[in-house]
Image 1 (cartoon, rainbow, N blue to C red):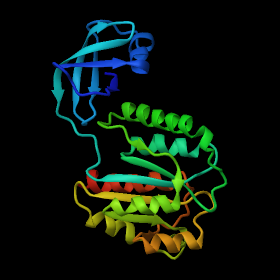
Image 2 (cartoon, rainbow, N blue to C red):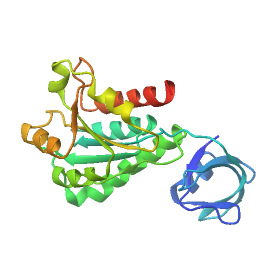
Image 3 (spheres, rainbow, N blue to C red):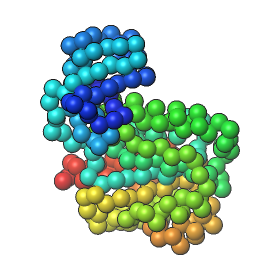
Image 4 (cartoon, rainbow, N blue to C red):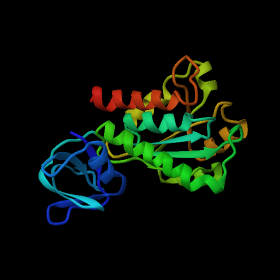
Length: 249
């Protein structure tokens, strides 16, 4: 059953679906009155719904039954990525959403080749958010992860104060055989805790960035004996968190 994220809470047992989702229901899925879909509201509650009315502007559905399901990781993970080249960030957002990330926080690192263009910022972030929404629908998430506009490392460090745990993947730790920091961090976490996972761009993080991150309480960790690409490392970490909290849980 096709899943959609509605913008507002139910009113009189109904949801109103408009804009792109209305187009998708009517033009792509070719659904009509009586068709059934799944709706997830802003609070993360999920319901099976039946199409009641289709207008030129919206699709009105009524709730048939609320569903008792939970597809979210028990901890909140934010992926902070040093701006990578090409479409790698889109890949991280799409696959990271499927693996359960709660937020994506791109930042401009010293070794980021890509230079952030503020003039194109709104459209770029809008595209990233759409990718997250579509991936959340496909993977049957209850929430759509939030994608922030890229910011400076200084701004990111201020945000980091709001997280329970902070870890930065550092390839020098991998080379030295370090394998315990990330694992021990997961073992210390409880349901509802937040974790900020930070990854550098293609060239890695500069020494001065590592020093700053350390000063702000980030633990340095390796992710196994192999050196992972900037678009691979976040997915490895999310998979490890899922294994620890869901498959082992």
